[in-house]
Length: 175
Image (tube, rainbow, N blue to C red; front, side, top):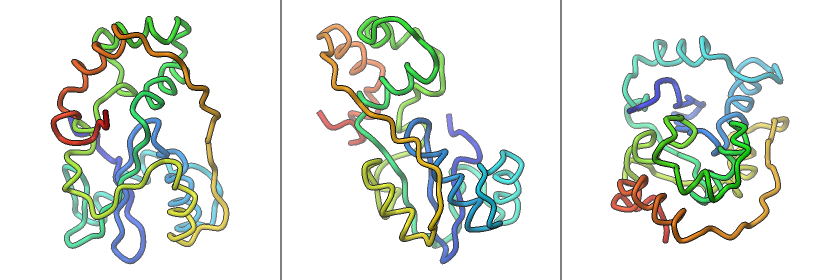
């Protein structure tokens, strides 16, 4: 399922497609700051208006645009999503049962971003600061939390590999 209004349209025909737990809030703050001078998050109605202004649909890319997306380590993203959504269980319990969660924060990259070959640039979340500066922002929100590595059980890894088989096949998931 393609989530609508996740592509942000910047100057110089640069389109940035975002995804949950991969810098989307930061990028919406950047868009709002660059377009209005306000340091607040871009609203859904503003995102919707951009799609109508540019006459785009689907993934929301403008014709001939330079296409960027932001990703992060998949396991780190899932741990971040579980914490964000308040799933207080042990992380291995959540990951071992990941197939039971119908939550867009656990969506695969393929279902939200398409395939890597659709992008001119794929930025790791650790490089989002350089991307933001390259777009011209001097003020922006960042939600970089600290990540504490955890030991992932074999059962959790097997469950994640089943759930994210499409990401593995499409080259998003780096084993």
